[in-house]
Image (cartoon, rainbow, N blue to C red; front, side, top):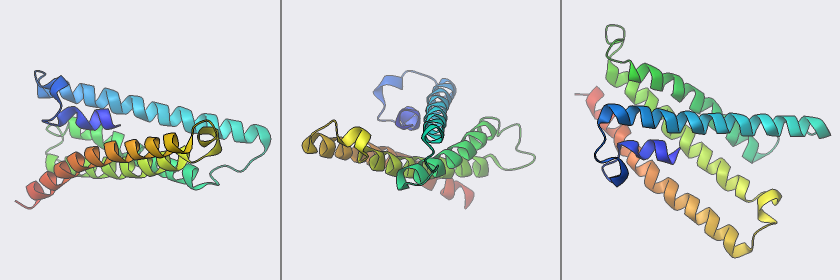
Length: 165
């Protein structure tokens, strides 16, 4: 998800020479890939738990993961409408679609990061690394997520300003 969000950042030197329209496709591709991976992960976990008779969505990690998935789904739908916002401008102002897309994307990303951090604490990961590695993994996720969220938040604030001007 971070890669998709960073597509529009001025700090992203990899995409400096690429036109903004092309960045929309790269952004969508990254985030579609992330959404597919989320769907596969949740599906595999549901299947795995059903094989051994365990409850679905019974941990904080799974509940936050599902919440992030639902918000990501909404964000994907809004992303498509944002892409075609100029064609839909007779129905709704493009800035509203972009604001909603950005808001749901940031909410999905934030809850997804919380889920990821909770997942790092699970035995399936924590038992295979040292305490220092676990701590470093968690801190790296938090640092990268914070930098990404700050950029996304600037975008949301810009959309809010555009709504009220």
